Length: 56
Image (cartoon, rainbow, N blue to C red; front, side, top):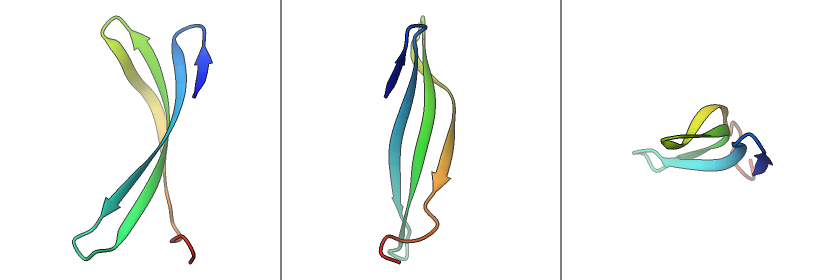
């Protein structure tokens, strides 16, 4: 995570899903979050799916 003095952060996270047939997939989220009066909110980002299975 990177910090900006204007209350803006970059966040990197992973997601995984399991399908009904037992296969799975994963994605990487690269988000920008900002601090508002209501709290932290995602202001934009990018989702990158993994196209090739690990070891494949």
